[in-house]
Length: 582
Image 1: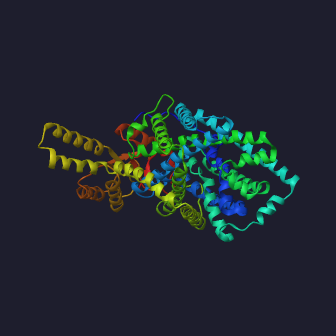
Image 2: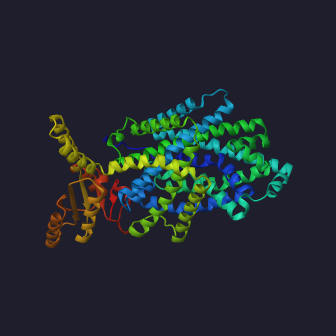
Image 3: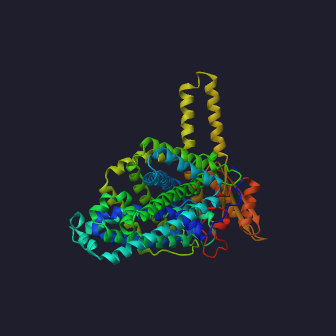
């Protein structure tokens, strides 16, 4: 792995813009979706979504505040449960980003096609994906400037559209809105209309998780501000656009023009020039959502690759400090899916819906595990138990509603999810699979020729190289039962045969003889892991961790600690990526 360069730290506006372009682009389609399923009560469904998102502000704030590292739901579960469970969250997040990038790029070029006749949509979509791959490779600082410009233009366009729709309402009165409210309630009853409208409207908060996947690139204290800013934008504009649409256009016209609702609203309220402006804004902000996908997936993949879930070749950096191979592989995956679907992306919308809502639910579960298993870990804010359970329940309700509305989406989702999780499971269990392959070679093929013997030796060497990675656990307690849990975790989750157990004592102090003797017993209990006990004198500090990492050539993310109490003098992020396992 290349040595990591000093990263650009993003401020509030840049961070909000990168994640906000994704979530704020939802108003281009979510108002029409809500009207389709909730009719005249769509704006109420969207307000309920705003309430749910308010609850998730605290959830994300607590989890990421306690564990301020890239990875989102993956990072939350990695530090509170098993690596396999965390990998499930990572797989779902990757699918969500992949679907977001392809759908947003394709929709952006479809909007552009209304302004540029004869535009080859598929080629233009590939070109747009390539542009943002290039921006991410150049560096996050440069790409954030593009995100800021897009975000400001988008908010300005929404304010302008809302103002003209408001003036139209003032001039023409509430006749259209009254006529819409006189129509029969969707699904036969108000509760059902709100249920299905809420389920569809939850897509309006897709992208809320993006900020958590590049939190390490943000300045201190910026992350909770991005959550607040995204919540404000969604809670104001999504219900407002739905309300104004119902006041300007009949429901039948909204449903007929749901793919370009805002453009039709602009034409009705202000004329062709406003319609054109909204279309240009749609192209830009959907393009910004593509950028969000590239930035978010880079942070996530970098994190899970450091944890040896994906191949290490992805971590190579260019002169700008960017992990360019991640961006290139993500671009190729997006293009392949685009070509396979031939631009018909309704199926991917199902993948997007289920993956995104599942990630939200897993983040809530990660918060529960954080409260139960890491209750002493310092954090800047805490979510209440009642609000946490309500938020998780709301996401599960929305997930169920979407599956009921579109049952075919679940089958399509599994077609993409199974290969993704299968690849991750292969990486997590690669030594066991290599050993199985060794047995097969030995049993069937070893006697045949020397080439197979060389293959046997090569695989054996690969297993040894993987298992030669040494791990470190820092402990300050003479607690053998606790160390037994540590060894069980490492045996079940990591590929290694070597573990350094390190205690840092003040000058003049040392471990008890009984503790050292008990460690010898543990060493015999786990013959597959060679335990080395090291006593150091001094203070346990971030500088000591970095010094030992360099001296022993062990990456910091392969160093573990137990959950620190609120008296621990250092924020977790200052420890450089040390993992919590107990």
